[in-house]
Image (cartoon, rainbow over all chains, first blue to last red; front, side, top):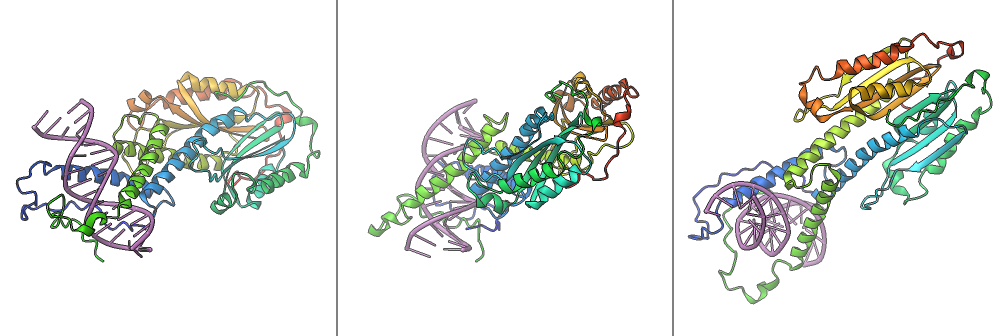
Length: 214
Length: 214
DNA sequence: GAGTACACGTGATCC
DNA sequence: TGGATCACGTGTACT
């Protein structure tokens, strides 16, 4: 199956020695083999480059590699877009809440293994909240790819972009996933001392400006 | 064993030359054409998908498309790394500061047009800061691709990932750029009312936890 | 042998 | 006419 990448950059000395079988048949202009070979090796060079760029794409057949590339481009592009969207709604709201949402399964179907999960927590700001969130994330063995935190008027909203493991993403189809566990962990963080320091100092004006187009 | 490529000695047996013995009719198992065709159309499907994904990649030949894909993957991958690094240092510090830093030119050379600029502002939190930052960014006609804001203990740190225009990125080589203008604009935001509301309420404990690994 | 995967040469087609 | 790009079928190698 896997071609183990043995042949590459073989320009080959094209000698005149052997009669090319076609004899006087000069029809297929004898250098379009070469032109085509050159073209192929340009394409394959780029393919090889992509192989080095993608983390786990070595030892994949050509089509799968391209599939992985598509996935990555969508994912990274999605991150950028999601970041913009996330920044737009990152303003902390009045009520406490936690949420977990599967990575957007790309409408064009084709790959639905979404390792990315977006989670958010909105609550009163307090010392130690960061560490608690970090612990919660680690408790479900996820990795924080990005964290966006907005704290204003004593209310804070954290939007976490998480990367659950490969096996976790593959284990469940579409629904389920480790969402409940994650949500529970985050809710625990929120409830741990919800009322404790709703101190007077944190009761401040909140400003109207959205974060859109910052 | 040895892959013995480029042995063009036997291109001979092709076409109608020899009368095909009766059995030869399905020599190359007739479904192999079909299998290969299927493979090709898998690859090309992914290629087409990439074409739709990339902004200006339509009407490009296959090799050039892949080149563009390589470029984009490098670019986006760099963004992701920068995002992680940014999150790690996003904790607001004691002193006010502004900074601007060119997008990292990817070590693997090949493309050095860096439209991406990273800017950060660290100062006391205050209402309206967001809007002022937004105005500053727009004043140098840049676009905020992502914004990460951490506010703790009344101190806030905003890290902005900016996209200066194409022409601006191309206009200057490596240094210069529109950095001074951007830096000046941000500094103006910082100085506008630096002392105004260092109100008693914002003098709170700061917690030690870094954002790393959140 | 069945299956898959690759490089190759070639005919078609469009500047 | 020639250069460039594509899809196709086929030979070959590895599992």
